[in-house]
Length: 114
Image 1 (cartoon, one colour):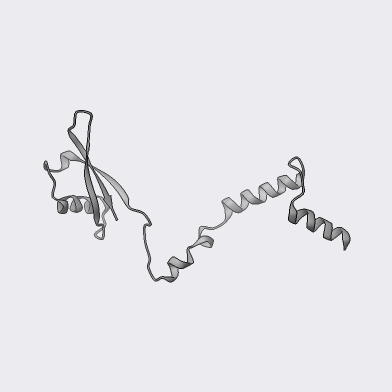
Image 2 (spheres, rainbow, N blue to C red):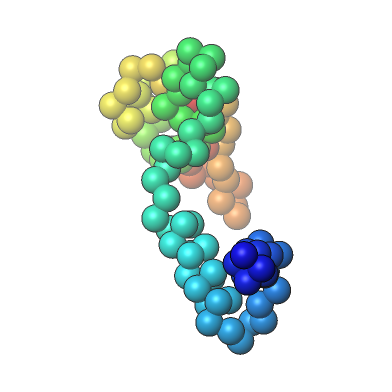
């Protein structure tokens, strides 16, 4: 029992040096855990229990060519274009702002969507 306790104590407090085989085994075990663990094990239980199911957790940014729009595009036209590109009807445009080149001409519109 004394030897088993010492082995357990050394393993628990990890008193093995970096050049030992035990250290190498632990490194392999950690890497295997990182790369082989299913994503489902780490679901956010608070989000799942709130009844809300999000398909995205952050806003997405789209870059639309300015030549596809008039000089000052209507927000509804921008939203319609984004819905065409994403093939989703539930997309909502949060903000759209022009992107200018070095000469100050509008070359695109950066659109934040939800």
